[in-house]
Image (tube, rainbow, N blue to C red; front, top):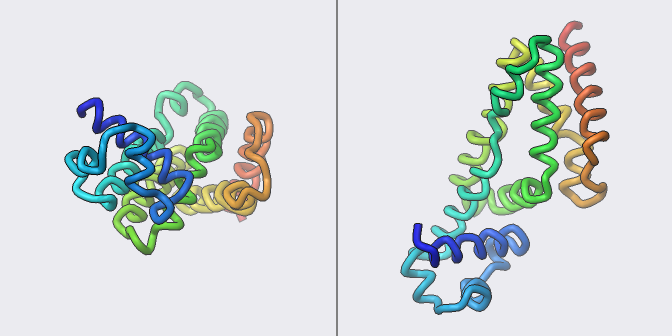
Length: 185
């Protein structure tokens, strides 16, 4: 990737995350990086293509599959599950991940293919990995829904602050205990 293309993409990512698709203009990107609109269009055929590539690039920053190295190091299945859930929560509560989630939700009607890609490469991968660790898809779905529930939505809506690492461990332990207990009924 050329240096200029990379520069355009990085600036576009910042703009889209803050202002959304409609609120981002090619003019503002050009103003910040220098050059002209024709430079942007030489690398990206239009704003839609730039948006799709920016979202794909941002999404790649996050490993929704929950790296196996972390989950495999512990022999105790409960410890493995807790490590994976803490890792997942740490990832989804990153400020950039929250901005990405907001952006995908806000633009899902305009860009269904972006929402589809996000769903399959994000939540579906996480669910698959949790199901693999737990050994039950139903329990994984229950746990996932708890993790992405009220607390997460309050943070996404900027009603609550992002939890600190200690709070994340507490959220993980509570959700795991509740999901496992609920699945045993």
